[in-house]
Image 1 (cartoon, one colour):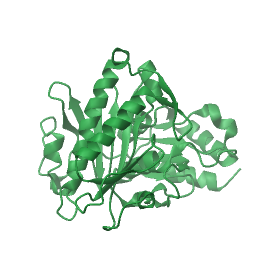
Image 2 (cartoon, rainbow, N blue to C red; image 1 turned 60 degrees about the vertical axis):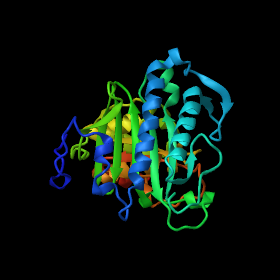
Image 3 (tube, one colour; image 1 turned 180 degrees about the vertical axis):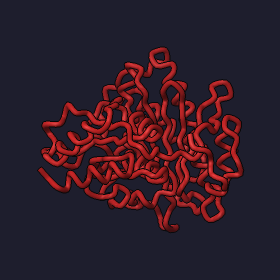
Image 4 (cartoon, rainbow, N blue to C red; image 1 turned 45 degrees about the vertical axis):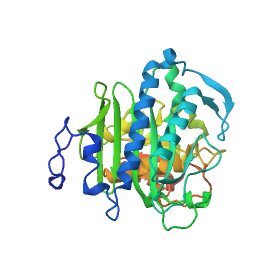
Amino acid sequence: MPASSASRSDPQIGSTTLSEHLRGAAYRVNGDTGLSVVINAIAGAAVAIEGQTRLAALAGVLGDTGEINVQQELVQRLDAIGTESFVEALRACGRVAALACEELEEMVHMSDAADHEYLTVFDPVDGSSNIDVAVTIGSIFGIYRRADASPVTAETLLRPGHEQVAAVYAIYGSSTVFVVAVRDQVDGFTLNPTSGEFVLTHPDIRIPETCKYYSINEHYQERWEPGVQRAVAHLRQKYGQRYVGSLVADFHRDLLKGGVFLYPGEVKNPQGKLRLGYEANPLGFVAEQAGGAASDGRRRILDLQPEKLHQRTPLIVGNADVVREVEAIIAAGG
């Protein structure tokens, strides 16, 4: 990985814990340390989810609950566990006014007190159906700061992605990695299973200048508009394909190795499948802070104004030059 920047007070890879790292100036908003408290709370719950993931069938977390969520999808057992764990952690940290979650129909209101100055939106367990076959899964969070002291409503959470003060994701794979992005800074931490702490292993993450991969489910190509079909044919000629089918896993590989992930809309379903607030905006924020870009195929993802909590969007994210290339081909039409 690239070396950390000179302004970092030289963090020591493998010895600096997440908690220690979060004491830095980049995690203070107007001098306040609340952001680091929120991120630490998310990390703590992620460790608990990691433990459940490792146990899998032994902990009885495989399969679904038989319930249908607001997305009209079967609720996986790990989804329910993850939602409860993260909601309780964010409530207990004492800094979150309200949250919205992919698995919950309504906003969860916590407090309008002045010291509860943060809002979070998240996908508790991205790719949770993959746990049954031991494929990498993850958790994705966007974090916003309240604009004022007004009472929080569901509309308060309808913020464009460029207003995020931070975005984080955890990836539960061959190792458990926690990636934190704030303005112009992205760092990765790996869970030490002995101590139970995340330690700095990937300082100052930047997407490599050379794109190596494209990630998309080509099974659906006949459903795409002609511009998208042409764009994917173009990518196929230039790059290797890597596709896990777990958004956070595909994104993480492309972030570290260079690549672009695509989940376009379809002719009969132009709004796409991924959620704007819970998936596209947080990962789009991470990508931009690491030198990449995120688009819905026509516009910058982070500029979209959400109209509802569970809004969906197409997503193209990764190397900035390739994202722009895809946008241009789509714009040219069939």
